[in-house]
Image 1 (cartoon, rainbow, N blue to C red):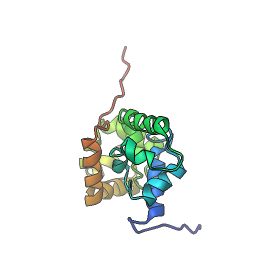
Image 2: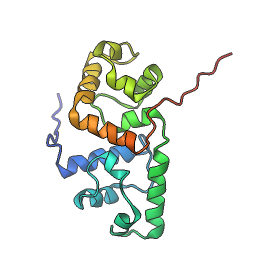
Image 3: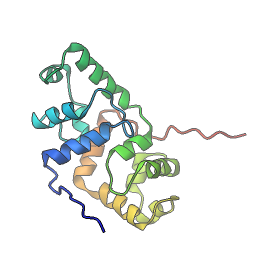
Length: 172
């Protein structure tokens, strides 16, 4: 019996900032040097609205931000580049799909082994994953059906993010 406030407008700057902060967080894509103050500047200046926009940033744009010098810009560009190789579950978690947390993202990666397989799965196939119930399956299915989310996924693929499981099973 809790009241929860939600920002429903997709173009709301606070919502964009929170989505970018979540994506960049240590629990997700672990993008060092991308804290809340930098995210706030990126959104307010129109440089980043979605996670994919982060991968379009260049040194010149970053140098225009407050408290940014050559070294900090180079460090952030390097951190963004390094994030492209993160585990698939980190990307899944970073997308901010409602009801999908860190463990669910790991379970989805283990079961499907690629983002494309998750995106094209039916609700029934999603529910076959241990820990995924009907609410999460509906949420995943609806999320991947959204045109804006399809665009985001295509852009992230274009920028070279890891869409495949890198898990290796150890066998005797």
